[in-house]
Length: 410
Image (cartoon, rainbow, N blue to C red; front, side, top):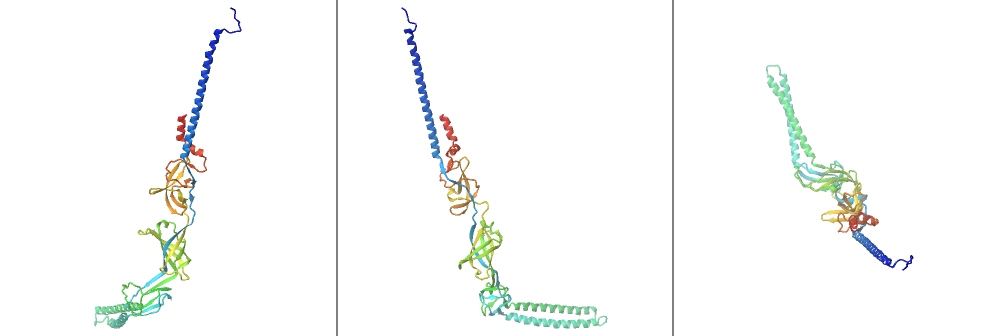
């Protein structure tokens, strides 16, 4: 039988079928692998998106604010006592009875004016006796000098000895000393008698009178109440006990304002004249003395005043919003956001409360980003998202743990 060369033999046809089947299987396997790879990849992307979304939902959104320098002029009001510039309590220096008094409380007096007269019969008697003793001493002095002169004329003769002459001369010298002693005693009593007239020590006003006609005055210093009190009120002293916290800023020359309850619609100017430069051990306060002019006489000794000081701003004092404070036990913190968007709790102390803002003392700087309204659950190291910042920045800053998870998923 003859075969056509263009026609393949029938025996060769079955040999192509396995190849086609193998190719089809390979294509099916590749398609399955591709579908599986796409599915795994899509699932991995979904997992990463879910992880990122979960992390982002866990991050707290916060608003931040920077600390500000405290430039406000501070005022502090402290109680003060108004006193006369000079106040003299006049006590009796000689015993006796009040004969009369010339000026009552509120009277303006001049230095040296007689305020009252004390009748001193005992002193008068002693003065009279002292005058007699002085006269007697002078008579004895004259006799002693005459005798001594006569004995001197007999010197060199055998009638008297030199010892007798020396004795007469010494007697004259002793008589001179007795005269001096009697004169000093009389002058002392006369000076004591001078205290029977009570006089004003300086120009001022009588702020107390504790005597009346016939009152007994004791000159032994045992009387508790003074006869008169004379006060110089042309200028007043105001004493304030300032707490130790203000001791460093209250300086000589600083101005202050006085508010008195008896003049509710008026204020008085004063200035710090001096301070005690020491803190009292009991009150822990600095004694401050202020001076105030009183030419109109409205300020009264013994009055109570509210003294208002204007204190300069503290050079390094900072304020934050009151809502930024976190109270943990006995400590107070503010939450600062670092460059990695992590929370750093900083311990601070409240120095002054201004209401919406507070002055705090602690390790803060003007560059710190302070969370304005931190939740109570906020803790050290928490990741946060600052309002207005790129969310991707926050995710990158806190994505170390998520990155490890993604790598593991891949």
